[in-house]
Length: 327
Image (cartoon, rainbow, N blue to C red; front, side, top):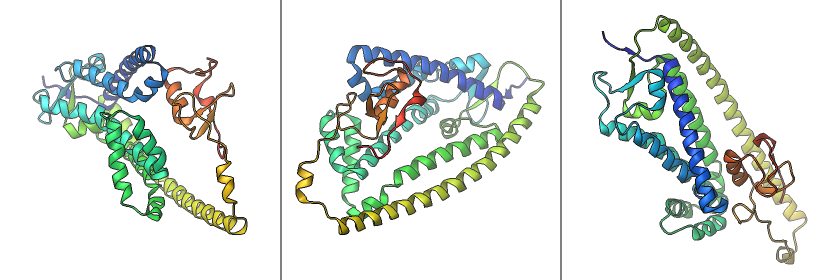
C-alpha cells in the first residue's frame, strides 16, 4: 500500500517536538559554557554555542540518515521530490545548512551592519576587542568597508534599512507559513530549499481530509491577516520617517538658537558601563530590583536564567523595563 503524504498537523507536531529537544540541548550547553567560561565569555559566544548544539542535534539524526525525535514521535519519514526514496546526503546537508547556519549568519551580518550604521566608532572598538579568527570580526570588517563608501547623509538615510530587512524577513516567514497551511508541502523554508518532503508511515488517517480543509481555512485567514499587518507596517514606517525628520529639524533649530559651549563636551560625564559586556551601556534596561544593563545583554541573559546577574533576584523577562531617553 502506498504511503500517504503527511498532513499539516503531523508536520507541526513533529517540528514542536524537535524544537523542545533542541531547547533542552541548548540549555544544557549554555549552562555548561557559563559554568566553565564565566558569564562574560558565555554572553559573547552564546549564539555560537546554540549553533553547535543545533548542528549536533541534526548531525546525529538527519545527517546520519535517521529520523529526528519529532519525526519518530509522529511517525513520518523524509523523502526527496520523487517520494520514492530518502533524500540524498547533499539534500540533507543543504537542509541543515539553511536551517541552522544561514539564520545565524544573517543575524550576525544584520547586527554588524546596524552597529556600523549607527556608530562606526563603537563598532570599531568592538572589532578590536574580538579575536582575529572570529567570524563576527570579518563581518564587521565587511560592513565597515561597505558603509565607508557612503557619505554621512547616505549613512543616515540607510539606518532604517536593517529594521526594514528584519521586518521583511518576519513577513516572509509568515507568508511561507500561510502557504504551508494551504498546500501542506513544506513547514520550513529550509526544507523547501532542499526539496525534502514527508510521508506518513503509521497508516491512513480517517480525519485526514477534514484536517487539511481546516488548515486551508486557517491559511486563508493567515493571508488576510498578513495583508492587514503589511499595510500597518508600511504606515508605521512612514510615521517613523516623518518623526525622524521632525526631530532632525527641531535639533537644527535648537542648535541655531542656543549653541552649546565647546567646553561643555569636555566636561561631559563618561557613559555608564554594563557589567555584563563591560562596555558603554546601550539601550539601558532596568530589572525589577533596580539594576541597569544593556537591553541586548539582559535579554540574552534572561533567555537562560530569569534572575538579576547582580543580586540574583528572580523575575519574569516581561518585567524588564526599557528606559527611553535615558543616558
